[in-house]
Length: 180
Image 1: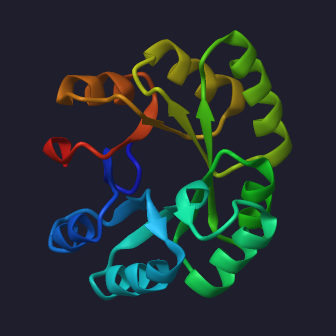
Image 2: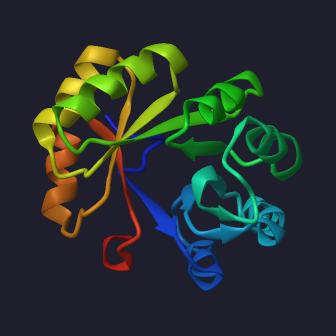
């Protein structure tokens, strides 16, 4: 299974990287670090190249990651989706009809159990599991929640991408340009 025929979702940190990706076959891209003043132009530029952006709401400079910021992003910036660790941001994105991706940092079993409670509450469209190097956990999260999983964080090789996909991830998010 793949995400819209993409197994890799390039995650960009710089404007130049976004510009380079506009000429590729990728449809969906992730914007990590950004500034509120650049975001609308990034989404507009990507749209002209038939690209769709997932914006990481927690990493936007100049904007507090809360439900008001999520409402602003959905109404004014109009990305394809919002990624966040915050359940109130995910709930707002869902209400506004924007793809909602709940990012989970799975550091230990307590974090995993807490994440299941959050997922049950927010019912995101996708879950992003970090670090993405845990095939058993990727499989477990998907089986327990029934929600498609993205794997992200610390993935450095094509083999690690393949392992994540084999474990049930629909795509891998990576900022490693060698893997795009």
